Length: 375
Image (cartoon, rainbow, N blue to C red; front, side, top):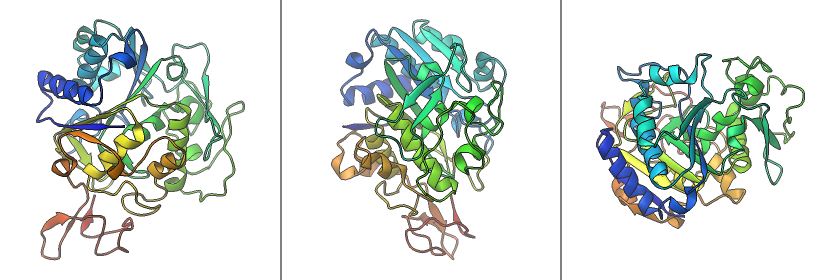
């Protein structure tokens, strides 16, 4: 499936809407996909709301509200019947309060979308009487099924609205890895089951340090390493197969390199000034990975993937191709869009593109430690 790339110089609302419309038109439009449908938009707001490098979260590691507003307006104009904007947020406050804390103008988003938007924190079952179970059709790499908030099942169209970023465990995080956040912390958090928990999912998913609560589908023993860099990519692939993505929109206007949030050592703001869109998450993320200067077909444990490459896993599962040579890029040509995220310092102090190789690591492998390779 085609993937569109558009240059976008800022988050000025009219500019974002224009560039997003161009990207969506380039991939065949969204009218047929969303008309008279319920659309769920999973946004990327991982971690608490904080500044990074003197900039707000929305200009670094969180999705920007101008992109949310532009997408909701586009969905409304294309005839969507109802729009749910969701994320598993690490807060117990009402979702509207959290979003306003993050700098969202909720009235502007509602106005742009014909007042069709519902906001929900999916860290638990939320407004639904019970959890929904999503099964991996072919059995799964690590989990055969997941229990999730009802919005992820009771929807006609699933949109992944994410940031263009590296990831400290999965290598990269765009449309596919964004779906990791559909797992409710109430069931998969470190202190689950607990409906109001704000604990992370590290013990259960990242390290296999505990089992799922009674009644929740347990993992399959595949004999893989217990390290997060092997488990997280498999869970990501399983989630995308259990809850297929119908539309991907990637905010690469302002973002960060070196990780997914302020908790990663060496993370820093960057401004690629790009918007990307596609209807297949593997194709879209493959192009995004190439834009970042990496090889999306790289083998496991090769840069930028610390362990398994979830794009390869998804390609093996038949979701889509991760080979950029087999993907039609529309709009800005891929070669003109490349913005290298991994850079290194030469011994003379000059910053150059890393190109997947670091002088202090085995060529092509992920550098665990570096005194002049950052990101």
